[in-house]
Amino acid sequence: MKILVTGGAGFIGSAVVRLAVRRGHEVVNLDSLTYAANLENVASVSNSPLYAFEKADLRDRAALDRVLSEHQPDAIMHLAAESHVDRSIDGPGDFIETNISGTYNLLEAARSYWVGQGRPEGFRFHHISTDEVFGSLGETGQFTEETPYDPRSPYSASKAASDHLVRAWHETYGLPVVLTNCSNNYGPFHFPEKLVPVVILNALHGRPIPVYGDGGNVRDWLFVEDHADALLLVLEKGELGRSYNIGGENEAKNIDLVRTICAHMDALRPESAPHDRLITFVTDRPGHDRRYAIDPTRIRTELGWQPSVTVEEGLRRTVEWYLENEDWWQPLLGRQGVGQRLGTA
Ligand code: NAD
View 1 (tube, rainbow, N blue to C red):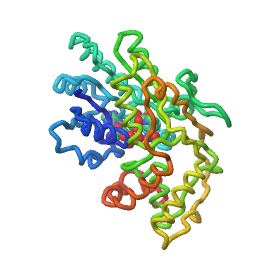
View 2: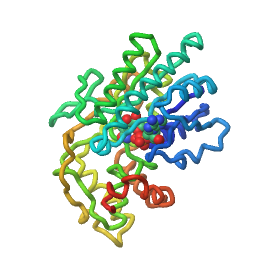
View 3: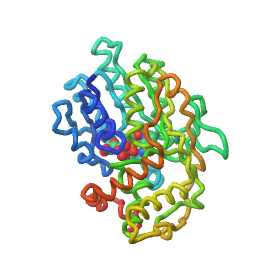
């Protein structure tokens, strides 16, 4: 299959690109290369004859039309987005433009391409989204595909809007779409401003490890390579017009996740243990959702998917990867606003 992957220079998109190429798919990586992008993430496949890169912006409809007509993909996997909740609070504009207007442009470009090709039956538009669209849970319960949308941050509201657009293009124009909503990812190549790398890098440098509020916010953690595997499965086997929740059933309070990472750091860097002495509680994020949890029954029972690693194993691999790959993360620390988010600026 030839797959156009948007956002393939980002964290999850690059995991999809690497896995798809390894499985023998042709991949066209479309990315505008924002501050969050890094082509090093796909260095392991970029010399493959199966791989091509196109620098293009979702906000530029003409560029999207050109890429589609030049490469003629069999499917689109749409991951490109502004993805950092804290940045969406500081400046929501880019989130509206890329996540909502950009998705609209891509849907229109895809529709025009698909119609122009004679509406091929096998064509798929796979929209990749987040569990944050469902809002916040109480102490119990899980998000299913039927949970009503209740987004509460500019990021999740923009992703919810994009989900609605994708469903509307299916119902109204018949565009063959599938959707996925996934829980929090972690793993190698995660941009240094996100929680897991912040904890690892601050522990490594003996700096305070910031934890929002009382640390009691609960997230459901999934190893990024397991997410990529689920995404390719949904692309190939998912039912048209249907959405699938993806999660590892690994609920953890932020504070417990941070302590687990500190314990891995203690084992790998005993000379600076204990690292949990660096934990520092900071003022909570406004509108911070208390708990997310995914019910992955549909993808497990209908498509037979299950994650391959436990969160304990995935976190150990992630910590090891950051300790072994300073060449990857060091140059990113100087990028726009990253030092501030790590507490170094
Ligand atoms: P990321 O920020 O690491 O990567 C996003 C990529 O999109 C970057 O390479 C960036 O350059 C590109 N991009 C941004 N704006 C663009 C534009 N206007 N035109 C073209 N390219 C643009 O994000 P991520 O964490 O890899 O997330 C990927 C997708 O998965 C997003 O849609 C996100 O909402 C979704 N998601 C993320 C998580 C998570 O835990 N990170 C969980 C569930 C769903």
